[in-house]
Image (cartoon, rainbow, N blue to C red; front, side):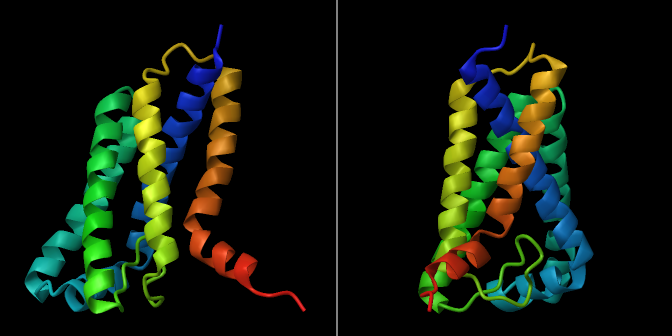
Length: 173
């Protein structure tokens, strides 16, 4: 029998895994822009950017594979460390330079905003909640499919969080 905490943990597992997968795919689709952002926004030399950009993508893919595979807990810890590190670095650059580009989900041309930092903080909270809820083994396939569907919706909202926040914050008239 599936309990509500098990189901929530399963949703969070799929959410984190699919979000990492989406981030990696977006970076691959706009790889040159992502690598250029590392060089321009973070002061990484071209040679290091050429090494760091694929390393970030591979780390995201590896963590997604762990979370979506059989090593959920290590994958969630890896995701927590990555999102924590990325958010701390982005937050530091945002507050010291005010204009920084990340390309986290493929938006290489748009400057980072406070909404992006809030999004990352919410993702970190979701990962922590998933870790706190624990193991999701034994979830029946029908519940896993529903959890994956709900997680997919949450991923779309998360990826477009900045745009949604701006759209919802505009005065109507």
